[in-house]
Amino acid sequence: MGELTDIARAKVNLTLRVLGRRLDGYHDLYSIVAFADCADRLTLDPDRDLGLTVTGPGAAVCGEGDDNLVIRAARHLAERVPGLRLGHFTLDKHLPVAAGIGGGSADAAAALRLLAKINGLATDDLRLVETARATGADVPVCVPSHACVMSGVGENLTMLDLPPLACVLVNPRVAVATKDVFAGLGLRAGELRVGVGEMIEAVTLPKDGASAGDWITQLAMGVNHLEAPALRVEPVIGEVLAALRAHEGVRFARMSGSGATCFAVYDDVATAKEIAGHVAQAHPQWWVHAGVLS
Image: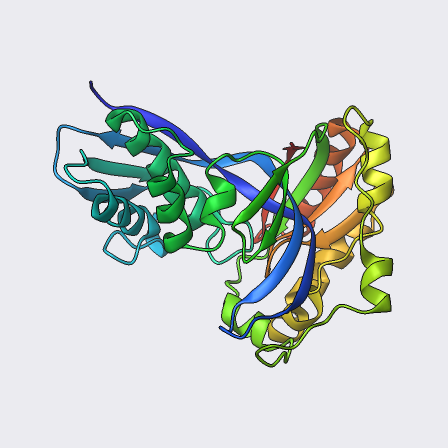
């Protein structure tokens, strides 16, 4: 069959509400998710034994061993599919790690898509779906890599008709541990957050075919409940948000996931690219990307 390649697009939480903490310790979420046009690239050689080689600018901070989600996903799927054909993966790593944009999860999802292709599996095969859930909370949403509402602990997905949105993504190259951010919420097992304030923060989803302007208006009313605890863990996130909000043309700016990546949405790509240039010039140590969410 020869080598196959897939791309692992960055996941962006346009909104993220934490509804409560379940008795098993996991948090119930409601998040509107989109995917960016920046990505890692994953190649699979099915004629070699299972393994992983990492290249690219992010290779130094991305493990190649059993801890990498690509290998974990492959092994989890092999446990569920007898005789699964595997292979050697090569990951060209560009997305920042521990950044709130699901870089590792997107890589794992790309691995599952590649393995599904060489083994004749559908991406909605129950075994693959179970593997995605077992590998990580963000892996299920990254398998389709399509704008959606993600709820539960990440397993419930409702696809959305989201038009392209011009954006700038910025990461200060500071890793943030997800567990520390969730711990900062201070929720006990079985405790709910839902109340009057939660209803106000809920975003009304535009109907299919709605314009980008309609979506931006509604999304601007949203929140990310993890932003406040993340700011306490890494105050530099506040600097990133301030930098994004300092320029004219920004419709709204917010943190993605558990941070530290933040994003801003604009009316057009030209404005986004102009702002990205200003931010990159002022903060050359930061990772900055201008493009489109969809």
